[in-house]
Image (cartoon, rainbow, N blue to C red):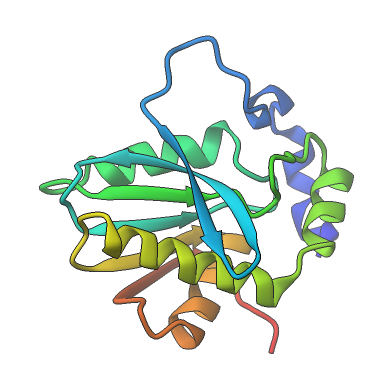
Length: 162
């Protein structure tokens, strides 16, 4: 998989940092599932339909937060939620991102996504979908099959392994 992403080496690594000097439009929340708790970031209208925005292999970085803000502003508005699947870690280079993705508990991550969808529905969203790019796209497809509470799914690119 790393070979396909060699073009990402040219990406400005600064954009993958979570640090930001500007004020964030996100509300940081914690979601409980089974015997674990994870952070998530929410932006958008309180009672709007929900969208779980699933991170790329980099983690919850500037790019994925930017996508979530743009998604929250589409049409008449959405509530976008980004679950932190890496539990605070962000890949700053291709090798680190690959290592983080390879270390993921994929079944656990699908449970994180299910808990995120359920959080949205318990907090004002009548419907909730999932979307993602690359690794997040693959997880969007997997979630649409494995999580019955998902009302819609859009994978921009990425296909899950069987």
